[in-house]
Image (cartoon, rainbow, N blue to C red; front, side, top):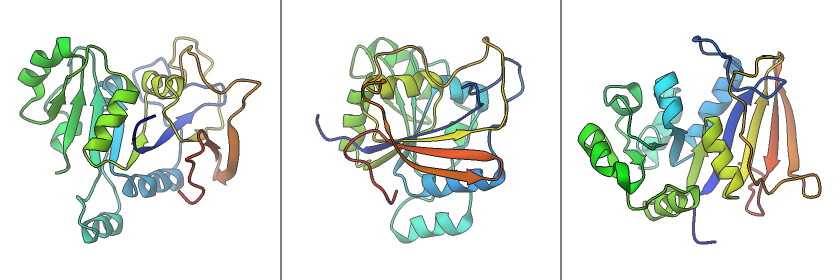
Length: 231
């Protein structure tokens, strides 16, 4: 495997494995204490990646929230918040959304070469479009991010993106928060799709930490031999 960033998958789900409800309102799967923990993890990363569906549905800012953490990054010669990264097939993204308009960090959009012209026309004024492959693989994307100086990548979903990183075996750590309720609706989005995952009953992922954060539980798994205990 070529050089790639240390890659941390971050996800919250219900007890029955759903990322959201099937309704229009966003399902809150965590609490303020855990949101602050995630903010701390973000502050220690060079880039944050979410899929295009997450950008469309959640209109995320993906910024470091606490001022002291932003100041600490600036003191290290960094932007206040990490680089924002998304992956899209058809470039159906709003250039006026908060992903593109908040913060002064670089924004990167990865898309297949067949969508490159559309992506540049729509998003070229607010982001750098990368379209040098017929299909965007997470392995290729990771290698490109490494060439751009990204040493630590945080992946915040959604399910399709998590599936791709896990199935391509290019993740080093999973931080999985479990909320204390069920969704119970198969129309809702699950944590991952079907896929050729490397971790199966005969090769389980290594659980390295379990932490109660109010009424949610953080499960931390090592997914590669590059896992960093102190991360």
